[in-house]
Amino acid sequence: LTNPYFPYGTFVVNVLGSTVFGVIVGLAQHRIPVSAELRAFLLVGILGGFTTFSTFAFDSMSLLREGQLGLALLNMIGQLVVGVGALWIGFRVAA
Image (tube, rainbow, N blue to C red; front, top):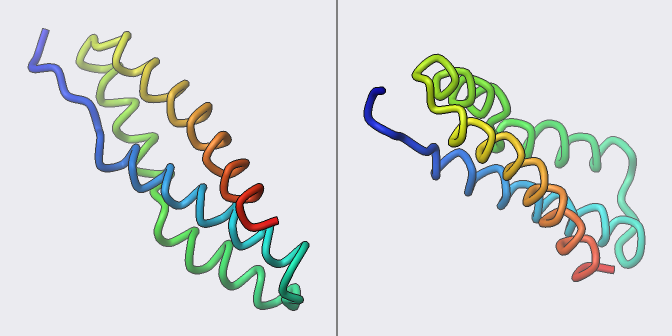
């Protein structure tokens, strides 16, 4: 086995991006009218460039190739669960 590595930076950026995504959606739906174009620009353009799905996929694949199945699963499942939870929290805070 190689040196265990966990992609904390990618994890944090994706959770932060999910939280901000939720806040923007919550604000747009409940407090501040936002055009569909501006919402797409903010969510897909800005946050899509900030979050790092391709890096997440690469990190997960690297962990798998290095035989780090546990860390790979923690990364994949953790980012999914924590990311969706963070988006929900951001949405609830803004709503």
